[in-house]
Amino acid sequence: MKIVISEEAMNWFKEEMETKSGEYIHFYARYGGSSQLHDAFSLGVTKEQPLDLSVEQIEDRIHFYIEERDLWYFDGHDLHVNVDTKINELTYSYQK
Image (cartoon, rainbow, N blue to C red; front, side, top):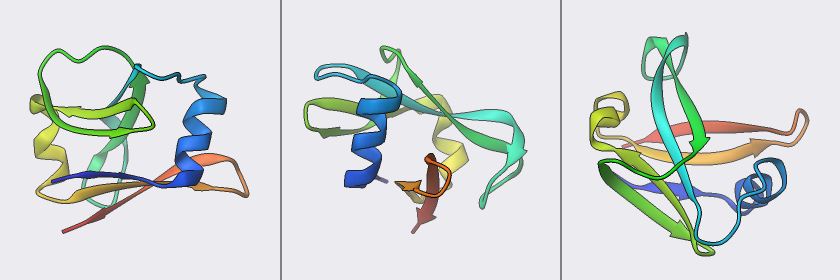
């Protein structure tokens, strides 16, 4: 699996989360909400150092990653991160 970050999403992370070169962005499964893949679970995002890094994508020296314990959530799908420009929020899609 891989993580694909759009240019709009890169700008969002830099502006909204004040992400800088060398920092880590963690995508993780969280209980609550729903997604295209699971009812009762949605994708969370936070800025923190990895504990058990499994999948990583480095863009503009920013590390985007998923930990081993959260791989079940993606069920073998790639994670595509974009932005809904009407509401200025991240959007996620999953592709095999």
